[in-house]
Length: 332
Figure 1: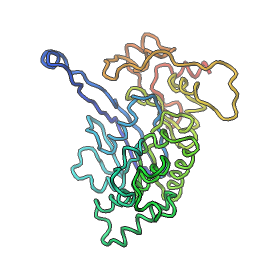
Figure 2: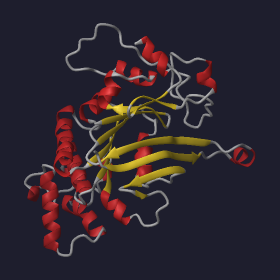
Figure 3: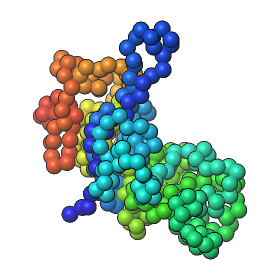
Figure 4: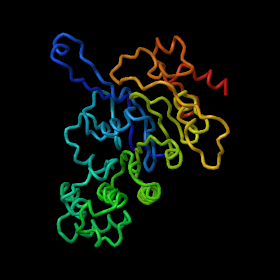
């Protein structure tokens, strides 16, 4: 039986949009629903990928879980303890870390790599001697395949390649030996030849140390290759969630199918023109009465514009946020 690490229930992150003076005084506040009722679980050593277009709320979801942005509502339970509203997050931050998308910006250009990687140890008071600190930094650098560690000790981020910078960022995140890592598009800015090495590094940490990942990506094919579960997000809402195989081979939501239509599949020759999703993603502050996807959905009918769907469980753990689930199943 898998041991639950993280349980997110009905998570909401709303932002009030800034307006001009006249609208602020006389108009109704405009609310951007960046995350609008997201729920999922991650077990220890499991990889859950959040997949969706830019602006779907993937990064904000991760930041809300790590308490890096204010949470409007909902619950985040980590290792059996509620995190939302907790005054002292010291222990939580040791066990939940984040890898940012851009290693050019996430690393301080003035610091040595050894200082960047070792900073979490000092901030959390986890080392008492310089020798102990250096030994842990050396171990973290070598586990991140920055070998020999001494060659990187007194180098600054601008002296490293993009892949080396991201490895240094990963070393800094993993030096505390966290249980959960939120990885925000960690390979999107790297060359294809370097991506494989970074992904292999992350999977190796999962296999060796049981690290669980919340992996954020717009690349469904990558999510399919590395994930245990995939959640498809659109406008702050999870449209469909299930195992990687269920999402790729048995998807039920029209948005999931639209993403699959443009996903390259190794060994499969394209025999017909790809179906491109029509229309633009609405503004996240727009007041949508029914389904958030109704304006772009090829199956939308009157009920889709008038009533918000509920989640339907098409198989154990495979949930779909759609009025037309049964019709989709019949038409396959």
